[in-house]
Length: 167
Ligand SMILES: [Zn+2]
Image (cartoon, rainbow, N blue to C red):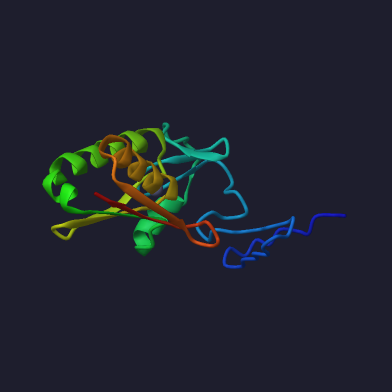
């Protein structure tokens, strides 16, 4: 059996559960890889060797926004992390510092792991990320350091994650 040709239309999605060939496509991850080298005009990450990385911009690089800057521009996060609870309210500064440090560290390693926004609603804080592994990482860091309950839910197509941490 030959594999059907991959569609290059990014908005097209097929999701056949239980099927051997389960093709799920994130609109922010083009099926067709960009022609290298490419530089993101917003964050200056370079797409090279099949991944976005921090490196000097090659002279012949074409400009193309990275998926995370595109999500930030569209205000369409991939990761959501809500922090709340009485314990959280008491330790808010400490926990948010931990989250910020962890996010800074992640961004140094992975150009796509960007925070979209940290919204402080007083007793609750919601953090959105442009890349879903970052939300997951931040939630796990908080739980690792402060225990509590972490609820993780992926969207059916696995392109978004919603997490709630409570203590
Ligand atoms: Zn970028």
